[in-house]
Amino acid sequence: MAFWYFHVDIALGITNKENLENIIESTKLFVKENRINNLLEQLNPHFMFNAINNIRALILKDTEQARDMLTSFADIMRYQININNEALVKLEDELNFVIDYIELNRLQLGSRLHFTKDIEAALLTNFIPRMALQLLVENAIKHGFGHSSSPAMLKIKIDNEASKQNPNAWFISVENSGHIDKNDSTNSGIGLANLEERLKLSFADNYTLTLTEENDVVKCKIHFNY
Amino acid sequence: MIKAVIVEDSELARLELKTLLQAHANIEVIAEAGDVRSAIDTLTETSPDLVFMDIDLPGGNAFDVLSELENVPPIIFTTAFENFALDAFEFNTLDYLLKPIKKDRLEKAINKLNIQAKPENDSGIEDLLSGDSQFFIKDGEQCWLIKIRDVRYLEAIGNYSRIFFASHSPLHYSSLQKIEKRLDPKHFFRINRQQLVNLEYVDSIEPWVTGGLKITLSCGKELEVSRRQSNHFKQLMSL
Image 1 (cartoon, chains in turn brown, cyan):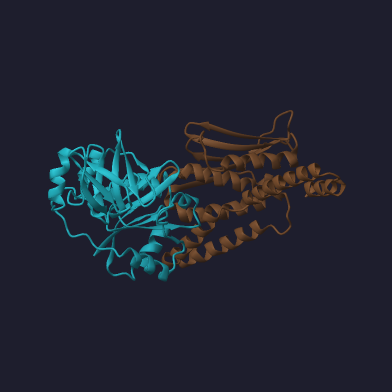
Image 2: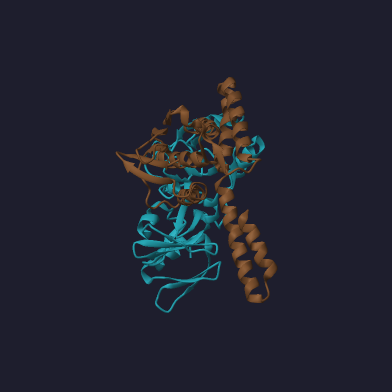
C-alpha cells in the first residue's frame, strides 16, 4: 500500500513528459509485481479443481470422509480469501489451514503421501507471514511427488532452537524426499524469493531462510530470532 | 469393444472417470497408468483404441509420453485448469476436458473422435500405420499431432526428417528409412533418395529432362522422381 501513496505523490508533482513516462513505466512495473505477489499468495487453481474432482469421486467411496473434505475445502477457501488483509498470522491458524491443505492433497496423492508433523505447541501463538508455511509445503509436494508416482515423505517440524545469544530462537522446517532441482523452471524460486521479501519486511534481520539437501531429503527452513 | 487406457496420477480421479465411462457400454478400461514412465510402457504394451490422459503427470507431462510413442492412439486430454502446455499446439488445436468432467462434454469428445475398435490381431507383426494413425512431433517450442493422411511428403535431413503438412514442416527426430518402414507402400512412395511422397497428393506427372519424372502436388509443390524410381512409380500410378 505504501508504494501506492508514493507513486501518487510523484504523479501530482510531474511537470514534464519524460517524468510522466518514467512514472507510467514504474507504475506498470509495480502493478505487475503486485499482481505476481497476489498470485503467489493464492492457491494454485490446479490444486483447487483437482480437490473438487477428487471429492466428487470420494462421494462414491466414503460419504463421511467426502463430507469432511468439503468442510476442509470451505476452510481453506475462507482462509485464503483473507478479508482482513493481514500480512502476519498466528502460527496456529496457518498450521490448521496447512493441515487441511495437506489432507486435500492426500486425495490426489493417495497412499504415496507419508506425512508426519512434529510441533512444539508453545510456539503456536507466534506470528509468521501469511501463507508462508503453505508455500513451503506446496513446494515440498511439487518437488517430492512431481517427478514420479513413487511414495514420498513430507514432514513439518516446528521447534525451539535457543542459543545463548538468541534465547527466543525457533524454527519452522518442511522436508520432502528428493533433490534440489537446480534447473527448476517452475515458479517455486519466485515463490521463495517473494517469501524472503515478506520475511524481510516483517522481521528485518531476525530470520534466515535456507534450502538444504542431505541424504535424499530436501529441507526448507525458516529460522526466527524473536 | 473399444479398449481404453486412463493416464492420470490421482486414483480418485481415475475412479471418477471410470464411473462416468459406465454410461458408455462399448468402452472398456483395460489399463491405468499414473506417471510418464508407466504411461509410455502401458501404451506401448497395450496399444489401446482410446486414451484419456491428464496433461500434468508426475515426471513431466502428456507430451513427454506422446513423443515416445510410434503410433499415437486417439486421445482425450483432461486437465484441472486451462493449461499452458496446450499453447504449444497450433495445428488442429486439441480438445480437452476440464475436471470435474461433465457427462455431455465427455460424450461429445468420444463421439467426435469416431473411434473404431481395432480388429483382433494375433500375428504379433507390427502393423503399418493407416491414414488415421497419428504421431506426435515436438520441434522447438511447438508441438503437432499429425495424422498420416495429412502428410504430403517427407524429406530426409541427415538422420532426421522434415515432414510437410498443411502450412507446417517441422523436423522429426527419426530417419526417413525408419518412418518409411511404418508407412503403407501403396500410399507413400520413395521418389528419390531424399523424398517420400504421399500419392494422394500427386496432381500431375510429366517427363523430365533428367530421364525421370516431374510431379506436381496439389499444393503446387514440384518434386522430381529419379530415373531409377520412375518405372516403379509409373506402375504404381498405373500409367
